[in-house]
Image (cartoon, rainbow, N blue to C red; front, side, top):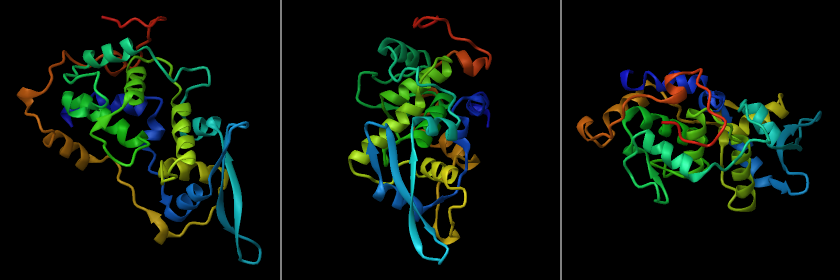
Length: 252
């Protein structure tokens, strides 16, 4: 679709492409059991839980599973490292959002995706829906999404794996709701390849589709004349071979 023609190739080539696009089937019983049984070992920096299998006598047994930041990185193919930052200079991220034409207030608690032009609004929408740890409120994006998108477009290092893992740990220590069902199922299937699957147990997830693009294009809330103006796509969106400078300056 025309408004998104430069954003889509950029996201498909980005280091979060698998996390964005993998249409992995999820099974509610496995994900629920994972979060209901989960614990975190602070010393080992490891999340432990269980999956349910059948033994040789066809009886249910719980089998321990565990994973670390390294497993999140490998399974989601996030192409980051433990040496990459999880915080970037505020002036860099806020300056970049203005470069993208954001016309909201960057000092607010949440950043409103509708304050971008359509292409950038779609990028924010896609990343937030795929990576968000929250149950809803997808029209707003928080600081860590601001950092992720900034580093993706500026082609700077950022430890997305650690950010996702930290939110999982927070959930272990808190509400233990069904966070990241797709990622959890991917991690479980990686550790237990023969995990039993019941088609009636499949958890239906909504993926980005042509219908989504049409809705985003038509139902933005602002007319084309009201949209924030930008000169065009920037940095790695414009040039997939773009290399960031070796400092934290916002390039002009």
